[in-house]
Length: 219
Image 1: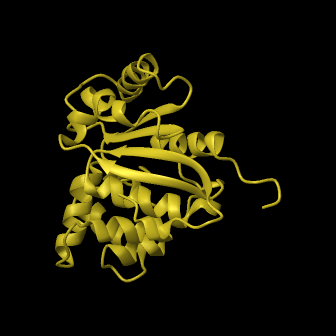
Image 2: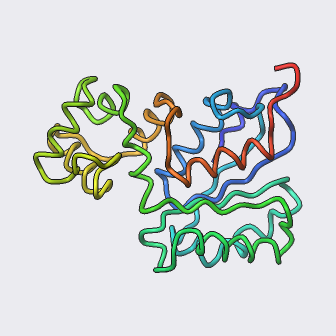
Image 3: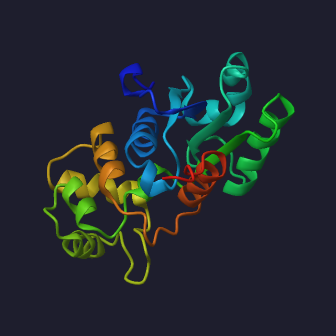
């Protein structure tokens, strides 16, 4: 949850509630919305991030129940979870639509959005940048990370990302004796560039926040 000390007097009082499936998603979104708002193209806002106790399946099937007590406290609601592990084999877009329809029918008309990350948040890590290599413990040489993953059969030459982002992340970290943590996702969220990002979930997240909280005219 966002710390009260982070909310400044000049922040837009319109509140956003973010329901995240796990601590990694929560940590990433806290940093993105608080520290990268200029890069996202949004104005400063007041927001809270909460985690669903039942992780991805809970966000998919019980977001309405979780958010119902908060419906009059927040202007907008964002539900973010991984497609892998959510309990549905339907396409990512279909899973999103079902959750959004449930929210619309329960009082969040025009002010709610579901973001389903396919397959998992790990796919956001693989931006071809020095910041990604550094966060994974590989200095600042991203080409070295990619070459090593290709040798392991985890990255096919013409693909823009590893075949299995989760496994690639695990092995790249393990090779450097590092572990996957919220701190890693925070570091990446604070540093990686958005240019050239083609991940549909991330692009939807950015567009949604821009629609809800566009920059002030004088900024």
